[in-house]
Image 1: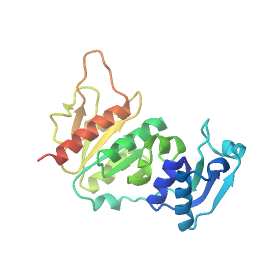
Image 2: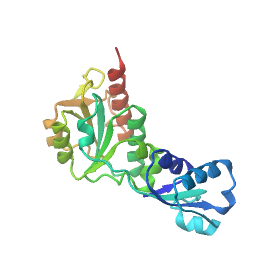
Image 3: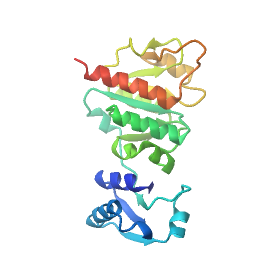
Image 4: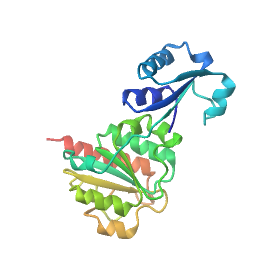
Length: 238
């Protein structure tokens, strides 16, 4: 995966991910921030090269190239990790196709203390550069699993002892009245269509965010934030 920017490269090093190569812009090589990262990379025996502005411009996917980039291994994860966790919640992003939204959901899940983020169906690649930048490094710290279908994810979560809560714009229990304690998986649907009706019907709980009349739905990352922080509040209240 491509890590674009000092924050992501530093986070990957702190998370002890395997880095294959680091590239630094020649005109930024002496800055304190970059020097600190490069020293850390050398200590991990990661190859580091400097490059001209034109090379950095060709390698970086953004309009204004970052002063440092790296190639790294994707974090490894397997379903047994969830089986051994304590009570808490996970977020499941189902068919979230916008990588910016997916990155924002990861950032929220990390900040609210979620045990994991599961990414299913037609969702964007959680380790693509746009999602990684949107997550501000959270996807490098948070247990993140890519699972082919939401049905497979639900089956795995049930085996691990999780209740399934499906989110719906209307006709669910208000998230402020629902019990979000214990081992809970909160499923949020993709932009536009949301979760499939059959999946919502089969869930243990249907959750809805109260909204004023005339408002159809919220952005999926905003909705995920509300669900995650209400779960966080309940798990940490006396």
